[in-house]
Image 1 (tube, helix red, strand yellow):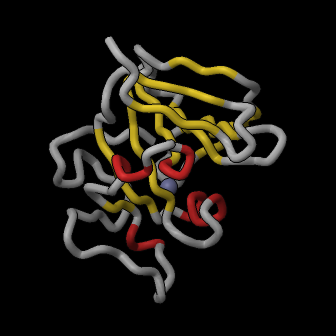
Image 2 (cartoon, helix red, strand yellow):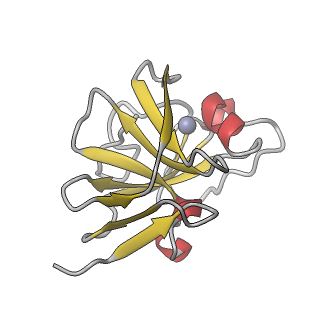
Length: 147
Ligand SMILES: [Zn+2]
C-alpha cells in the first residue's frame, strides 16, 4: 500500500503518514477547540491508526472534552503545532489537525459540530450538516465521530 497522506509540524521535526484516506472530516466549535485554534473552529480529519507512521517527538496533555470524553491532544514540543487528538475510549481512530497536513485540500469539513458554542461572529458554513453540540450519532454524515 502506498502512502496517501503526509504531514508534519511547523519546523519539520515531526513527520507522519497514512496509507489511506481520512474516514471523515469536520469543523468543531467546542470551547477547547477555540482555545487551540486562536478563537476559531478547529479543522480535523480522522483516520484509522492501522497505517499511521510517526517520526519525531510529541508532547501531550489529557483532558475531559465538552462531550465528556477523555481526550489526549498531541502537539510538537518545540513550537506547539497542534497535530493529533485521540478519544481514549475509542482506540483505533485518531484525529489529525488539518493545518498539519501537507495537502490541506483533503481536509475540507463535511460537517460542523458544537455550533452552539460558537461566538456570535463565528462563521458556520450552512452547507454541510451541523450539530449544536457533540453528535450523538454521525451528525448527518453516516460516519462516527471520535471525541
Ligand atoms: Zn472541539
